[in-house]
Structure formats: C-alpha cells, structure tokens
Image (cartoon, rainbow, N blue to C red; front, top):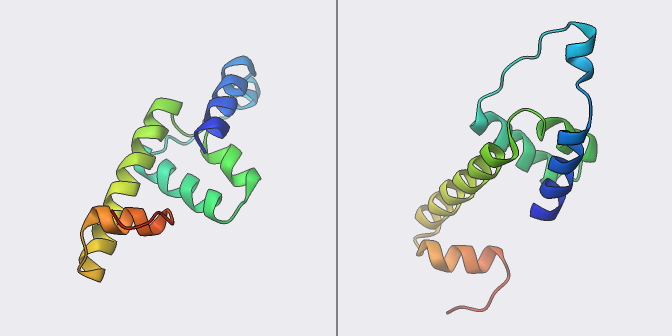
Length: 98
C-alpha cells in the first residue's frame, strides 16, 4: 500500500494541475475524510478512486490519516471482541498469536 502511495506522490508532484488550469476551484478535504475514502477505495480495489482520493491531501497527511484510521479500527474491534489490540492486529494480518 505504501509503495502505491509513494509512486502516486511522485506522479502527483510531477504532473500539472488541470483544475487550476481550467480555473475551477477544488473542494478542500479533511485529512480523515481523505483517509477514510482512500482506505475504502483500497478495500474495494477501485484504482480510479484510489488515485482521486490520494490527491485530496498531501501524501504525509494521507499517511497520518490512514495510520489513525487503522489504530481506531483495531481499538474498536478489540473492544467488540473483548481482546487486546495486539491480538486483533495480529489476527487481521493473519499472524500467529504472540
């Protein structure tokens, strides 16, 4: 996932901004909104949405948002399952119990 983000960031920095050239204003997106949309697009394997949502905020902000979303999701699942966050994270990644 991070390799895809890194490749996209490189393309994003070297490409022109068609919205600015056309004189259209871009809607500003919250970094958590961008992270949620990006992760949902990744989960659905929707490359067009992945590419679009990755432009909403800087790569650094997107990385922070994805990390925060992952932490919150693991904590929520741990509470729901009555397990530790570490056990839930390992289970989600298919790793053996520690």
